[in-house]
Image (cartoon, rainbow, N blue to C red; front, side):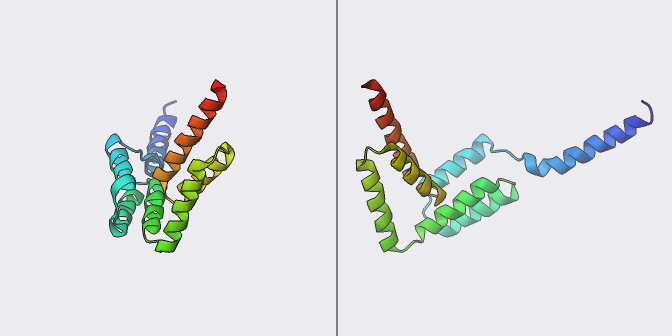
Length: 132
């Protein structure tokens, strides 16, 4: 095993170096900052700055969602009004699959809070259905 040991050590080091960018994780601090920003930050420029920082840390999904949130904030008022109407209709519906589909559409646009509200409502409908 003598001559193989340096090869294994160097190979392991190279693999660790290569994998390191992909192993970035959401620390509790990063997660708290991300969730707070998604809920409360209304400045698209600041959301994009934060997205750039998350990108540099290898947190691509969170960066993408922050950018989507920024885009949503910049939507014209008439589009925002249609989104509100869609949300209200979904919250008045009892069609769980449709509600979940709408929640997914909102989430894909970066509107995670709205999506969460719809999912919570859908779960309540499911629970009520099972209780009957």
